[in-house]
Image 1 (spheres, rainbow over the protein chains, first blue to last red):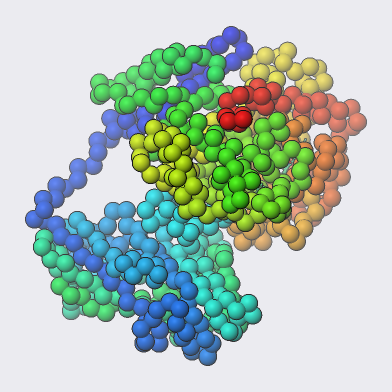
Image 2 (image 1 turned 120 degrees about the horizontal axis):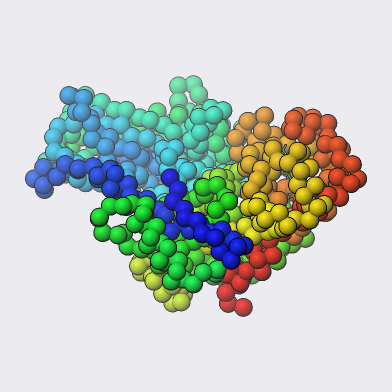
Length: 269
Length: 342
């Protein structure tokens, strides 16, 4: 849609004005399409839950600035590990689902609070499954300036080849020729196999997530960080490649192996 | 600029009524309007959730000229994009940023950015709001992190009050910074060259040689440098040798077929934007035309150029005269875009 009006001005110029067209478009759109009627959710119909991410390396507690040995015998010390968890959705046995609106969370191991995600305003009920993404959906990768977890000031954004860095891991390793490693994983385009978004799907099995007005249930996830370097015979050796700063097959490979380390453990209701 | 503000607002009101024709209350009117030429297609940038207004445009303009936004406070956007060169880096092949560091590409002219679907020679930037992040944070350019830049702006009482007035927020955020830049950048519209007058029906705007030149242009150049924006914003190989330094569009798509392709630049204000091409390899229009006649590299050259475009001496001269009609003197001298402080 474009709204223009024409005028002939001192015979030299024709000028069209666009008057704050976005605000007008919204107002006109509202006339045509009424706002969706959101189900009213009185306080006694909603609750909250938390997801805790506990990080391990070869079954030991994982923290930054600690040396671990990969299955390939390399020593790695992380100084940074950040990743996006987005588009969290819960499902019930009857097949119905609930999706968190504006669901973008940045987990940074340097900031312990961020490893515990709180999700509010969830319709009460028993849920038995959850899906989320490690990464950011393609739409938000190409939108304008974002806020919150997606604020580019979080330095999880590629300025020269736009798109979010889904997983940023940096550290040191004696096996790296520079002494350091830096793997920035991202890429949302399907072309040339460079879509690194990881969609994960969990069934809580015999457990249920019971959302109630005055409860604070918690989903406990285990993240085996060692999967970053190896799992099921697929490996990454720091000695072979110690930096990666762009989308592509390499990033997809590491991201998908890393995602196998995200395991549902239990729920406290 | 051309009309008194009040008449613009009146027009705006008429326009709101006639476009919506509903009896709902009128949405809060933006204080100001932006001018868009009627002979242009619909713009790409839609201002997101922030309707254009002159307060934001004014902040963007100040930021554009402010050296505060580089690590050692020596470089502003305008250091590499100056108005008399149509906001290219007048005469420099590649620009120098902080501590004299050199980048690897020629700084393009800046105008009509609201019509561009992608930015940079390789199209790696996908939204006008995201564009400033690259020069701000690039170690060869302004070398400042967004948090550092926001810290500096937030400790300036002047910027805080300007932003507060424009956004009704106490703390300056990344989004406020980027939106202000985008609004100023999109206000930089070049549409008043003699060519534009001709395009809109004023025959006398081009002399006979320029009119002949336009015909030659339409036969040979138009398929890429399409009117009226003088670019179709596609990625093409126009016959340059490909250097190992720069794979062009391939750097973004990782597709080998895109190796050596660069985004077709607009040719408006072309007499001011030398040197030419993504790496500034040509000093003059003559060298550019020579390359279209006898391409440096015909391997995988775009078929619109083939083994070269045949142009007689007369045709070259007419074409060059035509290219001069693309200079928009109003734009080059418009005080709306100049340094607001000095």
